Every structure is written in C-alpha cells, then in structure tokens.
Figure 1 (cartoon, rainbow, N blue to C red):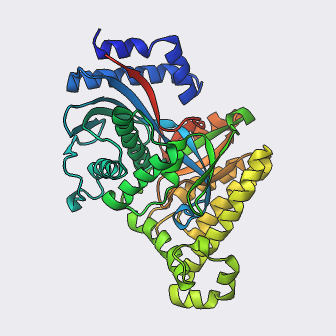
Figure 2: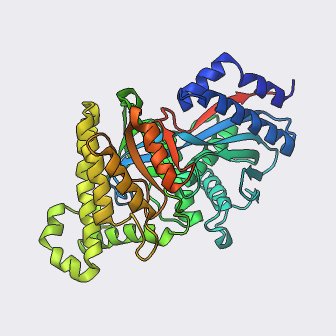
Length: 428
C-alpha cells in the first residue's frame, strides 16, 4: 500500500474520528466536513507530487483575541484562544533543500532553502515567511530541509483570525516534524514565526497571534519579559454560548501602516520616559506629564497609551473572572475592552473610508445587550467582529448579520484545545 492509500485508510479509522472531534468539535456536520477536507487534500498532494516518502498531515489553528487589544507589542497582557478554523498541510520531506507549496487559491511557491538571506522583493509574501522561518530555525541550531506541501485553509486572509500567524506556525511545525521529531516547544515556535513576519515579511506584529495559534486552548499571556502562558480551562459552548465571528467584508491586508502606527505611537510615548515599551512606564507617570506628551505626540498617542494601561488591568481581572466562571463579569470586561479599542485605540475604521466594523458592532450591541458580548476582533480597521451569543439566539443572530454582510459572513466557532499539531503521520 502506498503512502496515499495508507493515509486515506488511516483518516477513516475510529481513532481518527476521535482526533477530528478533539480538534474541531462536535457541531453538526463538522466531522464529515473534516473527513472530506483531509481526504481531498491527500488526493491533491498525490496529483501534484506523487511522493514516495512519509506523508504528514499538519495543522495550525487561527486565533481569536478576547482582550488585550494591541498590547502585546509593548509587552502587555492578553487573553486569547485558538479556534476551530485552521490551516492544514499534506506534506512530505524531500532529499534536497527545495520547497514547493501549493496553497488552494494562492500562487505556487517554489524556493530554495540553500539561500536564506532576506530578499526585498519577497517582502509581504508567503515566500518570505517560509524563508524567514527556515532561517531562524537554522540559526537556532535546528535541522531544516525541503518539502512538498499541499495546503488548504479556512482561516480567511484579511479576516482578523490571524491567517498569517497560522501559516507561519504551520511552516515551523512542518520543518520541526519532518526534520527534528517535533521537539520545538510552543513558545519558541511562536517566536520563530514572529521573527519571520517581522524581519522577512516586513510587518511589525507582536507575538500574541503566533502564541495563541502555537499553544492552543484559552490562554492568558503576559509579555512583560519572556512570555508567561497561563492555560485556562473555560469553554464557552459548555456555558451555553457560541463564539460568532462576523466578517464585515472588508480586508485589512493593505493596512500595515495603520497597524504599525499603533505600535509606533505607544513606543513613542514610552520613549519620552526613557523606555522602549509602555510596560516599563507607570500609568501615573503618563498622568503627571500628560500635557507634555500631548504637546510632543498629539492626543491620539495619549489615548492609545491610556488604552494600553487600562487593557492590562482588564485582562488581569478577566483572568480572575474566567477562573470563577463569572460570565456576567467576563462579558462586561470584553465589552469594555471593545469600547476602549473603538474610542481610545481607534482601530474600528480608517478615517475617510467605509465603516462596516462600526455597523457590525452596533448591530451586535442591539441584539446582545444584557445577553452576551461583542467587540472589534484582532487588529481592527477592517475584517471581523467577535461576538459571544447565547446558543438559542445563534441562528437568528447569524441570519440578521448575513442579511447585511453577505451569505457566508458568519463563522460559528469554538475554542480549539490544541495548537500546532501533527494530526496524522502515516509512514510508507
């Protein structure tokens, strides 16, 4: 039996169904969807590569950010979770250093890992992420090598669910699984992925997206020094709520400058106090010298700094509320975090453009007031909103949102307990 027939048999076994359920949940039709998805991906790899080496199925999830909006890049605190949407690769190792990646809906990537230098012409491309991950892994002493991969994803690009982080984490997991025995811990895997995005891709992201994707589950992360990850066991579906992400139909793919301005302005405030990041500044220092900061950097920088300090306090309280399973307090904190992002961080829309996020948030507030929670999701400016909807309201909520934002605008999700994972490894 060849590797493809063997893998197709493996993903239909009872233990494989249990594996799917653990990663993707038990929503109606979900197990059948994943079985079909994985089987089709195996066939795509066979049609493209006709490999005779071990076949791996490797997955990295998207993430949802619950609180701590735009604080990680200034060493703040966040509450985040991996979700049941992911990027999956059917992948085989090669005998050389060539990488060939066929991602559904995207241009083919073919690069050589013999050359790991930064290439300006690759900035803002997936090839840069692959080269950057490989370069950092080699620099840290890990083995790297070529591979052939067929990839599919349901983490939509530009949706705020961190498709780029899932991709970077996936590439790291591929190289780790194929050439190192899958030994890189989740924190280092996230740091490698962030390095690739910062240095090779050219986007000054923080570490939160990669950490949530790499680690899995609901996690509180403190970035004060080295990241401290605190797993939390709360599951929203067990409390009678669905996580509904609403895609406003606008993409943030071309808004790197808007994201960068948040980090730059926060760090500029820190710089006035002789520090590199706001975490090293005390809130009372800002209050005492606010007039000077306003004069030097403007009101928006002051507001964004205030948001940072208040978000850190909110995350700490939310962690306490999660441990107590106090839904009312949790939702109050999530809504407050979203309102701060809207009014102080100012990342719900770009001035002078359309405002779909603002409309989606207003619609959610109308429907969920006193019953659930809502907030801008992820980076903001465009993309998605995050909503916690009572399960008996989900169908109606989704219908109303889709009527305005499009037939497939809503994703009903759950927290995924596992981060980057080798889902199946079928030796020839």
